[in-house]
Length: 160
Ligand SMILES: [Zn+2]
Image (cartoon, rainbow, N blue to C red; front, side, top):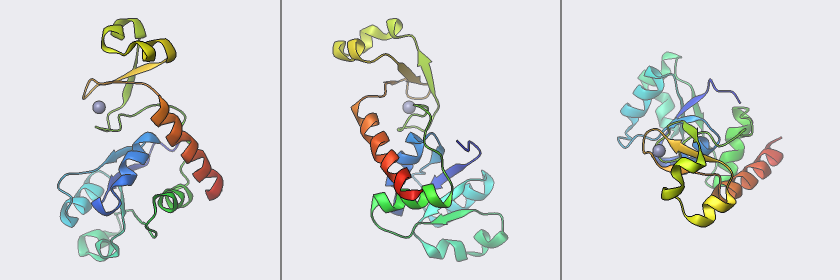
């Protein structure tokens, strides 16, 4: 994976924030989602701005030549993901690495230490667990994750 790439996502393509995090990319989805704020974050933190708003790129502050952005063309999620994968040459995620809620890296944990906090069937069926250092939630690559991965592998096939 190209770990250099980091993102800031506009509210008009907000669903992509979750997917980019699932792919392991450091992705901000600011609550203050105005154009000023988005451009400022993209420039200050050297993040690729992901948006559907062509006007943003025409702003004087965005035209310093420093700001990188991806202008998403289509409405449906699948096409949007395909465009990101194709345009930015994103790699398939290698693992379960980032908290989808808060964007923080996940830390592998020893299952035995967390048994009290986990449902029994999960303890019995899942081999690997991870803790988010921000929200402290224990995560595991369960059904949601598996479904997103199979969706992503189709997207990658279509994009290549
Ligand atoms: Zn978290």
